[in-house]
Amino acid sequence: MELSDFSRVLTHLRKEKGVSQKQAAKELGVSQSLLSHYERGIRECGLIFLVRAAEYYGVTADYLLGRSYDKHGMTISLEELSDEDAGGTGNSGIKSMLPVLNKKLICNSVSVIMDILAKSGNKKLINEVSGYLGISVYKMFRMLYNSNPDNSPILFGADEKSYTYMSDAAMSRCQADIQKQLTEICQNCDDISFLKMDEEYLKTVYPVLSASLFNLLQNAENKIGARKK
Picture 1: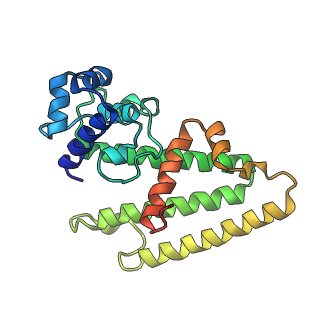
Picture 2: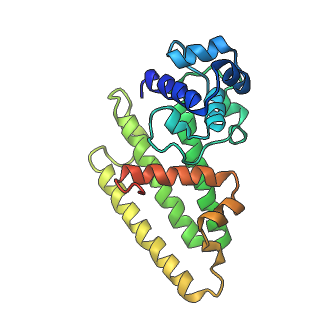
C-alpha cells in the first residue's frame, strides 16, 4: 500500500460525497490545511483520523488504505479502538495502523469464537479449538523468530526443519477432533441454539465484535480466492 493510494481515495470520496474540503475538514475535526496535506499525500494521517474518515464516508479502513476494492464492507468504529490502540495522540503513521487494525479484527473475532465455545460448555471442544488457534500463532511466531539467524533456537523443543510438519499434523488432529465434537453435539444435544450464527443474530448478540468478524471473514475469503460476488 502506497501513501498515494490513501490520498487518492480520500480525495475521491470527498468529491463523491459532494462536500468542500473546508466542510469535510470541519466535520472530520481537522484543519483544512491538514486535510489538504492528507489529500495531496504530503503527510500521513493518524489512526484516529483514519477511523473517523472511514465512518464519515461510510467505507472500510481497508478501502481507504487501498487494500480492498470493497467500499461498503464493515467498518471499525472509534468506540472499538481503546486509548492504547489509538496511541492517544493519533500521530502514528499508516504503516503503524495496519498492525493495530488487523490485531483488532483478529482479537475481536477470536472473542466471538470463545464466547460461542463458552456457551457450549464442552471442555474438550474448547481445548481443541484453543489448541488449533494456539498452534497457528506458534507457527507464525516461529517463522518470524527463525528469520533472524542470530536468534538462539534454545527457546524451542522442535527443530527448525520439523516444526512445520509437526505443527500441521497437530492442527489436523485438532481439526478432526473439533469436527467430531461438533457432530456429537448436534446429534445428542436437544439445544444447539449456541451454534446459531446468521448475520442478523451475530449483529444483535455481538454489536461491536461482529463488525470485526465480518471483515475478517471477507478478508480471509479474498485470500483463498473465494471472494463473494
